[in-house]
Length: 480
Image (cartoon, rainbow, N blue to C red; front, side, top):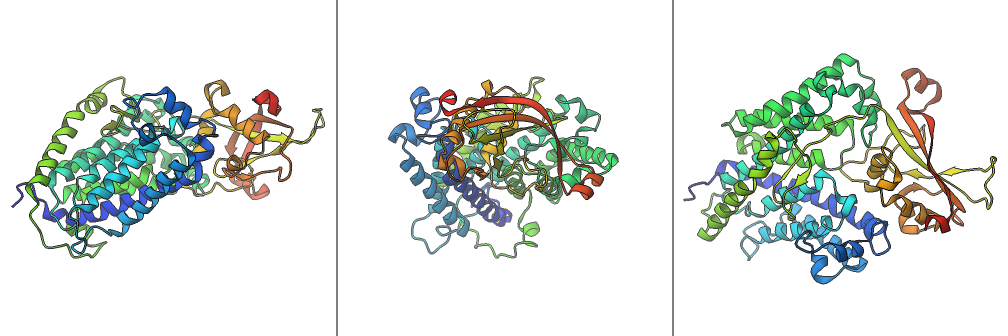
């Protein structure tokens, strides 16, 4: 009999593994569609250059061992897609499969493959949810197949990760922007967040009293509720319900890739069989004792995570708390947080091109439209998450500072001048379907949501005012 066995959490593990498989699937599909134009051999930030400059010990990846090529990247990404589907359907997770613990190998392969992608992804893969997916994925390796009884120490480690995600985000807010302390941050956030969704306009137009209540609810969910994850049932279940509800609120009010979805998946660890059985009426396998070698691995892994948790725990207590950082190159244990500061105004970069050979005051410029970020004033912000539009997100960051701080931006302009098809597929529209433009430029605009009256009269969701040049007109020669 396993002394740390937790048969009441069989369904917890079953649902969590499949939820994580879905998130892995999205992540690998994003890689299939976006990695090559962003980071491939001829991408904006070529991965081969990075691999030559950064040693394996700093950024471990299969591409260090076997070399990088776009063809190898495609193999890695599509292998991840196939393995994600295997994990979702639990193909190797039952009594019928002859190799015991094969599901652990599936999740181990998923983790290695995605780690190899993230560690050469540079700024395009620098988001906190990359490390969060890798840390959750590494933990999932050791959960074991459905034919075994779950180990409670692993359930606790899942809750510990969830605690760091929520509590870390709560602390960074209280230590950061004053508007979180005076409850006014959501006067701005729905409008200025990186990627608004179809409902963000409506959330922004809620009464300020409700915005203050939103902030109070956020503080309660992130600073108070996480402590109850470590208490007995049904208190842990109640904590899980609150976290799922608040994360779902974020899902319907904005596009944050798979950050909220991983957090919801981790919150499954707060529910036992009795609670989850009301939603997923599945019959668990008969409890089985786990082999001694597996229990030894679980204990060793638990000890490793406790040891590596020292620095993230110390960071939570530090006045100089950092967020979204991993303390090891394998992204095993990290620290998390989001929106320690909230922008009060929304600046957007609009890229335009012209086919005219000589620039005059009468030159006609045509806009490029991105898939997710604001551009066309009458286009309702789209629903994107859990899919992640990496270039669109970085355009939001770029608008906050000079292009000299974003080494990918001028190469992007050069690709547009060159009519590069892989790069153009990252965009929603290309105004130059024949020959590429002679010149392109980038303008900086101040965007805001329209008022209800403006929206009724014009049908526009956005209003904008020109601030000035972000990058003045450049030709292909000058861009290069």
